[in-house]
Length: 264
Image (cartoon, rainbow, N blue to C red):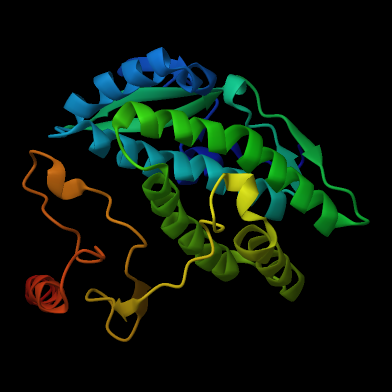
């Protein structure tokens, strides 16, 4: 593809054409559709992230896999094409990076179908329905069952990421036409897809966020996460994120004050 930038997809979305060094585990995403495969992945991943319970491995996977969904959206917007990211073409890899575990998504080759110049919006809608309904939905449902967590929490983890992806691309867009295409595509994702596509009562990407000031960038607003990522349930001392929706306002203010104090 003429506009495909392999390095960008690798750096931004962890979608790579090369095996990651120090890979400890690899399996096609399609193998995770079966409970045996999903349980094997969760059982391998949970101790690597020092999860105290298996549900943490589910939310962490959803956070990483959200990058694959972002890569799919980016291909629509930036490359004006539908990337082939079906589960049987993507291998999830766990690898060591410094003192933590990284997650990457390996594809043997990059394949994409150009979007038509006419009726682009209809083609985008159809592509999203197929990807989220036939690929993402069954994968998240299987992983959620293996991890012992409600699948809605996995969708929520990915939802926050997708809204930040929209922000980034609105800034990256170089023309009014590109910016308008970003808005159109995300309007389709957030509001144009029926809940049935996701197997939910509501489109999980249609989120009304509470906002807060970014403690590291005065005057900038940032989102409070749609759901908790469960980082507090790891044996790492991480605790709650300062954007966690479970925090009371006084608890959040205490964390924010510490961050601001550390910045000076």
